[in-house]
Image 1 (tube, helix red, strand yellow):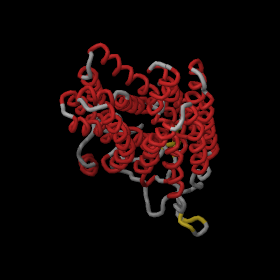
Image 2 (cartoon, rainbow, N blue to C red):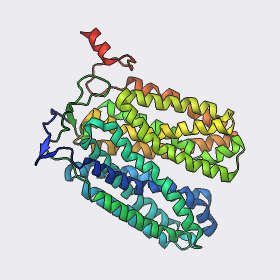
Image 3 (cartoon, rainbow, N blue to C red):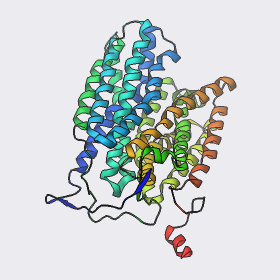
Length: 437
């Protein structure tokens, strides 16, 4: 269902600027996302858990796969609740569930308790992560309509950087104990404290909020809709499905490489395992930077141009990757990480532009199914193609082709009701409007 609304007047509230305090809310959002993003440091636990319990590689990654697989359930439920009740209670509940799940994972004591690790870290942690992840994104889109791409990019950029911080800390803790699951207890406590501090500051802007001196664009590359869609109304538009497909394909190709980055670097360029571990850690920085950089760039060049760029960059990089020395390999890998992160940084603002901000939590929360699909299918494709060919040339070539073919989607995706040609016009919108007049 879509209803038409016009931008509300705002400016002053109690003698203070309407935007007073929104920077602190953004900082609080980043703090929560840093705690949540620690999930991307799971690979640090693979070897120690295998050594202690004798689990296979497929067994030891199961808790992480389950966590990623159930995230979209948390984002879907949390998005709908936060649109009705506000972001704070949802974020607080998500942080508690996520952190307690990780703390309970410290109870695992034997090889036959993999189910407990899956239940605590995977199911509880993943559901809590989804609940808490969606709330700052939807909230900040309402506080920063003037910088929608940049601010949502910064918010999810915190998630990308979470593993960069957690990885070294977890390695240090693991080195100091013979009972490896025990490190989940102090880590969970740290996530709980950081998450509660940040989430306690969450709130939506007041009724009638507007940024003083800023007017929504009526022409240009990112024209926000004046209609407000609820989740059901958004799902009935082809645009929701097209945006979800774009995010799914961008995620699929990027995470397929992330799942093989260390092994591929060693296999194709001959670097050592230690150098490959350092390489993967550095690449995490580009994951976070891409969420901010591409999202900010999309404010200027347009959301669909940004997604077109991400998919084209990945496509070309994948095709070249199997045939270069380590220096070029690292540059191409960084571009893939940047583009992978960029999808998560740019899509929240895109969804808000297309469907409005009042129900952005539920609408974008449902889109996170793309993360779960891409996170399962991408690594599976890469692994199967590697096993069938005995090398990375075939999987990377296939992923490159998938990315290039997927670039057609941003070319034909338009906001609901937009009467524009079914292709991206690379000329300025002003020129287009002048010719139409």
